[in-house]
Length: 282
Image (cartoon, rainbow, N blue to C red):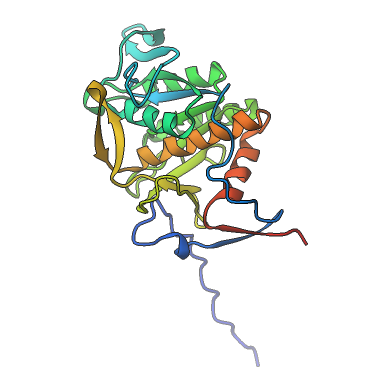
């Protein structure tokens, strides 16, 4: 007699997680092998001294009390002659970039912050301008690029992927924000960048590794106080504001260990995340 086996169940793809909602650190425990647990010394790394960070966003307001000095500022734009990047004295078009820069400054107070403006008023901007501004930052060989933006346009995907790989292999780390909703967007979906979503915990220094990627880390991003236009502050929520916290952590790590590659940075962030319990090597 021939036995007919029932068809195997179709493997289901992992659930895509864009943010940590309704769950806390205890809900996402991770067991890891490695060196013994280090002593509790707060955030990892140094102060950011000697590390060049570029905020690719809406610009940064110069001399905001929570941002401090901005080393240099550029703007990417498109006209009838094509795409261009030029140095500018303009500040922030809508506040978003200033918010991100303030979080970076709080996290890595001695890093050098520069800005490439790719957004205009009311958060307007095109994928081609975003790509041009990001390319400029990568080609200027910044140590860390904060990108609290993404594009959902498929026509930019492959060029963004090539650019993200270029950054990865030249040791420029791109820290990219996941979309706030379950929308496919880029470049945060690429493994060559460090992708960030937000959690809702109150601890402003808590960050977590996500055992259910593609988002790799969760950082403070819910009702956080951020720098805003006119030297002021507002409270706002979103993955945009979790991302610069992780960018600041990368600056801290690079200031204490300048030769770390993006791969090593990811591993250092993973091992020091609050929900990762590291066992001693066997």
